[in-house]
Image (cartoon, rainbow, N blue to C red):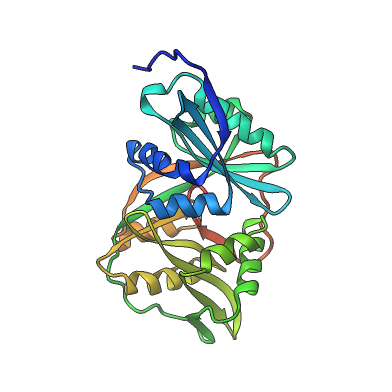
Length: 284
C-alpha cells in the first residue's frame, strides 16, 4: 500500500553523494547494480532524483547519444511511494531536459503504461540471458575471418557501433572500452563486428555485441563464453535476430524481457552490421 505524502516531493539534479541512496533503491527492486555501475552511469550521463523530506525516493538517468538521440534508464521509485505520480514527475523533468531529442528506453511491464502515456511507442524487444557461462566449442570461422583483440582500432569500432545502432555511440564506446576487454571480428582484415566484456552486476556482461550476421555474433559470443566458462555472465539480446534461441540451446537461459520504446523517431541502422546485444538495458 502506498504511503500518503505529507510533504512535497522535490526534484533536483543527481549528485555523486546520492549514489548510495540510489543503490539502496535499486537493491529494493532486486536490480543487480553495484556501486561501480551507478558511478559509471552517472559519469556517462545526467540524473534527477526525487526527494521527500531530504531523502532520495526516486531516480532517473539519461545519456545523450550525439545531438539527435538520448536514452533514459534507471527509473526507480521507492516501493512504498509508488502510485503517487513520482515516476511521471521524474520522467517529465528528464524529457524537458532532453527537448529536441528522440528518446529511447527499455521498459519493464510495470513501467510500460506510464511510458505510453508520455508518448512512447514500442518498436522492439530485448531478452535478458544470464547464468554460469556454458563451455563452448571453438567457433567455426569462415576463410579470411578472425577474432582478435581490439588493438588501436577504437575509433573505427566506435563508428561501426554508431552505424549499426543509428545513434552516435562514439563517446559511449570510448568510455566503456576503458579498463574492459574487447575483441573484433575481421573478414579479410576488415573489422565487421566486435564484443565488449565488462564487469557488471553479478559478474560480467558481454555488452554490446555488433556483428554482420548471426554466425559472426556467435563467434564473438563463443570467444567470451569460453573465456568465462562456469562464471556468471549476462547478455541483453535484441530479439528477432536468432540469437536468443541459440543461447537457450547452448545453456544460457532467458530470464526476462523488456520492451524497447521511442518518443520521436526510432533510430535507423545503416547498411551492414547489426546490434545483436545492448551495452545495458539502461544505455540501449
